[in-house]
Length: 229
Image 1 (cartoon, rainbow, N blue to C red):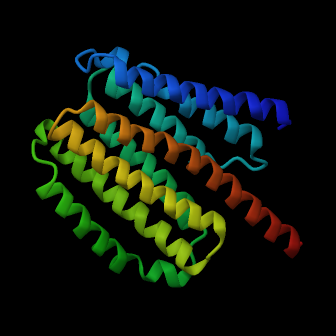
Image 2: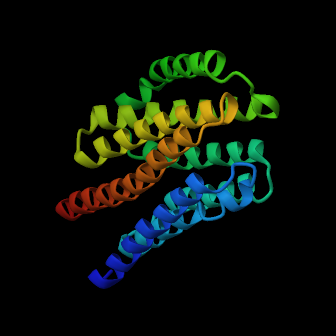
């Protein structure tokens, strides 16, 4: 990808992110369709950035970006938040599959222990923080389990291969978890534009960090592969 194309796509991501956050801050929360109408745009620009920059496109990463966009549309346009949560969970599983393929055998053996601890932490949030779950009870439970598994795999991936790309990916997933917790409070407990802006600003940043960590991981593995040839 040439420099001009990359700059244009980066500016598109920044501009669309600013527009989305502006809509969240200014549009009445009762008009959810208009308020979230621009949410898929930053993800589209990141998908294009990844597709142009990657020399070996990972179908699981592409699937993750596409599922996030579909979930955004389902959530706002179709007003089916429970289904959107399930789709977000499936997107998490795409990342799990991508990282599991590079996880060491020692790391794979430790998955049950780390996953169990992650699930306990999620259940604390599920029981004590998310109060009015409505018709999203099982959807939240499914999503929480996928996040717990994703966090586990990312942690073990970094533990047994301490490269910057794995560290950034683990950090990004941690940032996404924080964003989800804040957003859960807004959606299921109290409606507050300030918390909305904070959680979704963090969400936008985490999306960009996902893109950067994917590219860095690819460069690392390509470099190691070239050394072995």
